[in-house]
Length: 404
Image (cartoon, rainbow, N blue to C red; front, side):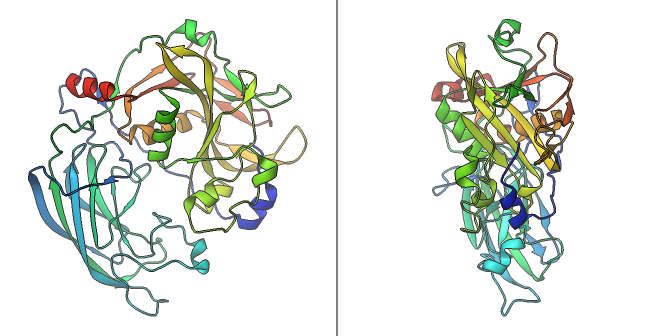
């Protein structure tokens, strides 16, 4: 967890930790409608002209002194949302009014931490689900998107709490039923998964380690699915791929662009499991606060399969600041000692994509509940390991839809 100190010195800002709110998933034996009514949603995908029947048509207003406004609309997985916006806002330091597409962002705008980093300041944005893990998407003057999961629709203004504007946007909202044959479905929370047992965990080390063999973070999640599906679910949930080559990428992308990725891809040190360093590293954080605070994880392709499917073993932690590295007296990131919060954060963000079929938790024999990392930091856990089965094929999607 030791990163480029030069990078940290260059863009260090106050860390803002994502709030972790509960997300209700649909239980397998529930008699309720099979929609993730309160689960966060991933970034919706661009849609063609909706063919489903229009079931909602309404207008709301959001003023420049608001961050988010509740539309009162619930959407179901696969439904089309057609949103059109009129109106203008005005910022005190701006030379002119801006419309729903927002103001273009310049170099001095880098330090503004906006809900949608790649969107213009003052743009109209939306999200489906809770603020902690729902991925904001651009609405602007007009947007037609498909929601991959169900949830509550919010509209907001892409601005900071201390940088509010004057003016009003009027938003017209239409929601059309999902197209016939839509494969979007809710996540199932299951009691057990085939192949997930203590025999499996006898082949999985409880902890990862550094190159010298010092024990580090706890293994706290497994993902069952192809490599492409694994990459797709992380990307859809707003995580970005992080380079493990610290020497070659400490300053790469340092103020190359205003994109979220150029900050999040700050190098992640290599750690080891199954005798090799991680196959993938992923990070999820605000673009500036990433230096002091980011959600991050490493995954390794397991040397075995579960029911004939590729299996990925991971360790996730949440950086909350800096501390002394007991190995070399250097500076390293300090992790949140309650690492179960990060495991739960992984669950919420990935399940928000519509790409997870089943989820469960498993407690191995002799579960790990308290330990120290390779750098000397301590952590604690209830010992449970998160298991996520991805929707790898059209067959998975069809079977899940039939089940529900």
